[in-house]
Figure (cartoon, rainbow, N blue to C red):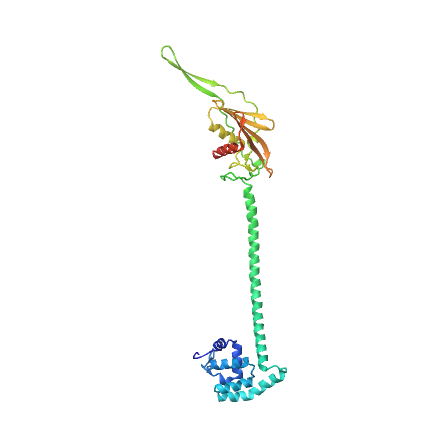
Length: 335
């Protein structure tokens, strides 16, 4: 046992509430000696044994008077407390006995009201916790509403960014951005002059040892028809294996694509040929090898106007779709 106890210590020792310990003091003041009356009130060491005995008596169903007799047999009661209890016990017991129904002891009623008070305190605590939970729920709902607003703004911003040119982004199975309004279109790129002449230098030595140089040139055939500037300035795309449109970074127009082809080849003869709905760009190398690229005007599922590289013929024979995609990729990397 400890040297001194507080109400809380006695309640913990007996396994009851502090209110129950205080009721023990009111019923049996002479058996629970007070050591100090400061805050908190402290009791002597024998108060722990007294409270345990009172708890055991009430647990057996003994009344207050019967419990008082048991305490007198085991503990010493202070005389002053005995005198105070005599006049106070009668009025306290009389209403309890008169108010208690038949077969219900005063101790049972006290436990009942104590339990009811604890339940009321628990309900009050539950109501307070519920109010705090509602406040937290309102804060969470407010935060969710803000997140939804931010998400909607981000989606709108992302949609606007998708409608703009991708700049230096790599080609991906994404539709090209919508064509700009006519007033905002950039100036058409200057159409490069194709190298249409084959030139050869021949040195001729004369009888007396002098040398003369001659340049042999083959004039290009007269220029025929060519696509319109609108067709040449339309972004170029290609189909992948899934039928999706693959564009070129920066929305490269057809004229820029053709310019890359001409810059990469020396001494070729190039011309445009109209075949039905398609324009064919034909290139002939000095060795006799020919390339024919077939271009058609089409629209993407989103309604954007593009020029599709539909077919590539080498020496008059169509190449496979995989070869066409690899050819397109090599030209794209040089853009």
